[in-house]
Image (tube, rainbow, N blue to C red; front, side, top):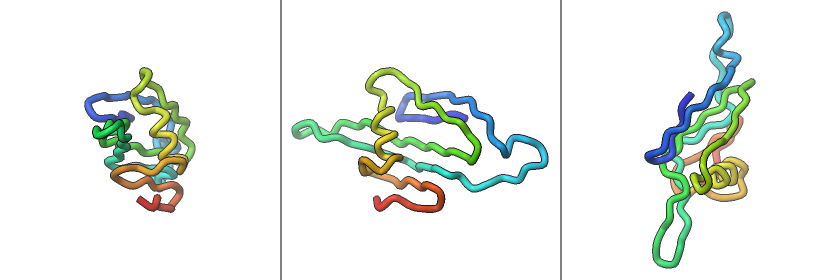
Length: 99
């Protein structure tokens, strides 16, 4: 599975239950579409997340990795409900974020 953040691409390797033969596809337990998080620095908007598409299936193990300042914490804050996305929505087990 590959995830993108603006012009950066992150490759992730996961083991999904749906990957095994005989298993049916299941609904995602977590999903973001075109997720943006902007922070204000004076008169300038600084993008921490730019168009992140992310999906987690039941049974998956996921690691968020990347260099310092690439938006790992911002992504986790938005997914965890501690921060609100500037643009887009997050779905968690059938529930949609207020943004």
